[in-house]
Amino acid sequence: MPVHRSGTSPSRRSRLAAAGALLAALALLLTLPGAASAADTAVVPERGTARMGQGVLAHDGGQSGGGVGSTAVQTEGVDVSGHQGNVAWSTLWNSGVKWAYVKATEGTYYKNTYFTQQYNGSYNVGMIRGTYHFATPDTTSGATQANYFVDNGGGWSRDGKTLPGVLDIEWNPYGAQCYGKTQAGMVSWIRDFVNTYKARTGRDAVIYTATSWWKDCTGNNATFGATNPLWVARYNTTVGELPAGWGYYTMWQYTSSGPTVGDHNHFNGALDRVAALANG
Image (cartoon, rainbow, N blue to C red; front, side, top):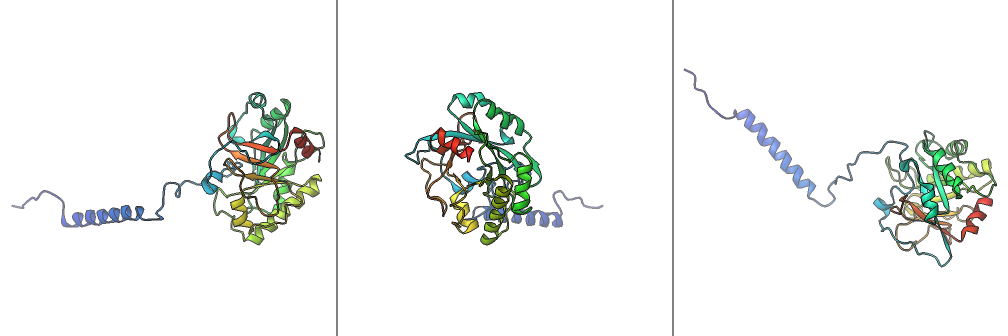
């Protein structure tokens, strides 16, 4: 009569032991310095969802503060994208916000679906407003993206209410920090964009960036400061070091957790200086 034994077979016990050893090894690796964290393995966001300052807290650190980095009068502003949806512009206006920037485009594949409500809504409550382009230098040339921007909301007119367009050049939310470009290649891409924008609109584009990113990805290039106004991102109580070539900032994004709309900014001057930038 055959003998029936309970429990697992030798081959199954061997497989279970091997699996247990593998899990133990993985657990040990995760406790070592430099081990991958949940943030390291986060899912890459969908293209088109990038917004101004998205990488500042993650890469540049700092803390949201009151933004007291200049002795000049500061004028409050906000920046918005499709992430905010329909914006309560009257609430912002009544709280003291007098200017705004709206995301118009990204790369050559995305247009803000809330653009009309945001761009016209800010204008209708009395704000001086403009638009920005989120750059993706790994997808198409600077000239191609500048043309796409101008053709889809990034133009300029001398009506006293329209600020010059902004090149938002910062951390890549979809991949390599510097979009796979050398420092010289990045400088060339930015120059291609701003030169094309000026040829199309007659205005020098504002450059939005963070000092740490600018150092890493352009080698702290100093050639844009004489022509392109600086919008610097730094979430702290002081603006800190500026990128090379700029002796002062025109705008400073000082927090991503402000009231009504998270991204709040200071314009380095009174409201008449905001109007002067709009008028060119």
